[in-house]
Image (cartoon, rainbow, N blue to C red):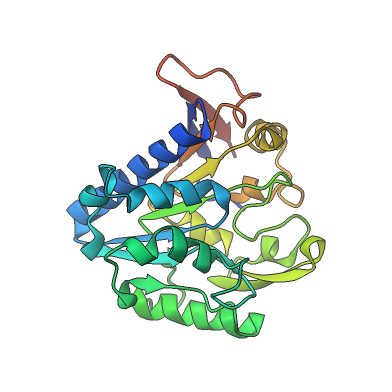
Length: 267
């Protein structure tokens, strides 16, 4: 169920949420810049939640260095997942991103590829799969190859909208799926894990002491994706990056003097 036999996990530990946001903003700019330098364009998929919000705000803050360094005109922005709500709803991942970054960014409407959470869930998933096939010019069973996918992780070990004991964990043929989440009594639209793993680069952005125990399990414990869906994230590149605050990293092996730690897992 995983792409690649060995996984190198590189994690960077920051002392507090503010430093975490700065590191994430820097990482976004570097990875987008690399993609643009290599192929003239960058396609990235982002997640919602409170943790990336501060990084998004930094990316468009004109008093910070990142806004002027981001090659906005060569960027296509996609979403990893979305709640089944309209785009102006308080729970919408799109709304959070729009308020934190898009309204102040120079991105044009055609560069922004949102999931239509206002549609019936299966229709929304089908529409986004069609959007991916058209914008990436996919043929047959091809999968989109994002340059960067940014993920978060919940205290229950979920990532994207791949929740424990839900149908999306088992989907390997579709690009996008509507996933019913009983524990949230809601529907979500999400990229499937094979699509995430196919990206050139995948990273987690995780903060908070409530994530520490489950993060240790995800990275070092037995492979139990039904219970810990984040374990399905095993990029085909063989490298997984995590940017963590000190509280989330508390139970991992100590990072070195530069704040970097390394773990290895085998299939």
